[in-house]
Amino acid sequence: MSAMLAARLYSTAIPLPQSPSPPSRFHLRPSPAAGSRSLAPRAAASTTAVATKPAAAAPLSADRTVVRIGLPSKGRMAEQTLSLLKSCQLSVRQLNPRQYTADIPLIPNLEVWFQRPKDIVRKLQSGDLDLGIVGFDTVSEYGQVNDDLVVVHDALDFGQCHLSLAVPKGGIFENIHSVEDMAKMPEWTEEKPLRVVTGFGYLGAKFLKENGFKHVRLLSADGALESFPPMGMADAIVDLVSSGTTLRENNLKEIEGGVVLESQATLVASRRSLHKRKGVLEITHELLERLEAHLRASTELMVTANMRGNSAEDVAERVLSLTSICGLQGPTISPVYCRCDGKVAVEYYAMNAVVPQKLLYKAIQQLRSIGGSGVLVMKLTYIFDEETPRWRNLLTELGL
Image (tube, rainbow, N blue to C red; front, side):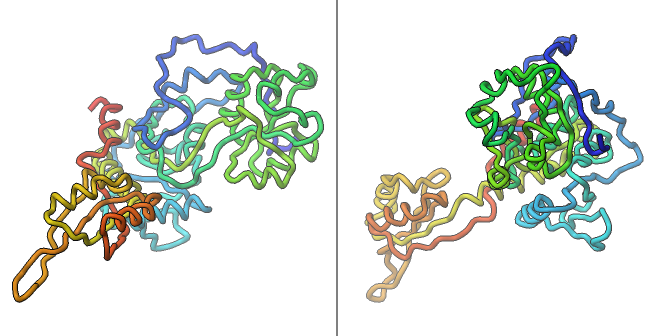
């Protein structure tokens, strides 16, 4: 067997960890409304045959005073990361494209390092990085049982995909439509186990074990996993899926219950760095504020309309009767002054309100129905709350 393809065997006889585990507070499926999370409780779930475990966390380097953030070095994830930071007025300056280092001029004490995603997670654990932007799938796979990793922001709104089990459409899987059906197939025996190829040995083995697969051989490979079943090298794959087009074009299908986890880009930090390295907590706060404010603003629009009325209260009463225009706390109504017969008078009032992008056309229709005219629509760059909810959650996670 080649070096790129290593087989690992496991069965349900593998013993569970003996040490008692705390109640789990961490779930594999991130939610946009969720706050910072520690990966620590995942240690109790490590009941697979994956033998390799992350090394113990190294002590922080005392002679390093600059704060380091790891960003993806190549591919679409790298492009989208830089685009998001630029949208937050945090453009990354890389003087030499052949170098792995860069900076963000608006944050002087922050050093950028371009790395492979899995190396970002590893170097966060080793203390060589303090912060990183990486997919949740990579954090979950390579973070494993390390309790030093804290997911500061779990929904950066790009890199969306899911890790899923997929099988051939035909053959012995033609009538298999769920993970439960697949686990009960009589074909899998100790002598002829189910062969599953994946680049996610930890998550894949854990998922299969938890779903009742008794005889499994995990094959490790880095790419083109869809080719393994047609070539007869594997029975199924566990791989990242975005649109599902590649699966369909290779005659593979997902089955019910086969999603291992949902993933998108996340901001991750080292707990030790947040506690002990000067400047990390402050820089994390600024990054979190900018990201949260920009991401919230990206789904909203500012709508301004002129409306006739007897008073600001009269206009407000009509606007508040609309279902699609509520603003952040409510609409802002202000007088529009004009000169009439040589005198300054108020005939119109300007209404300003923040409206969700998906409700824009409905909002315009409703404004017209109550006399709105001259409607202006403007994009927003930031919406800063009184306090970013994820910042409060992070402080709670850190015990601060």
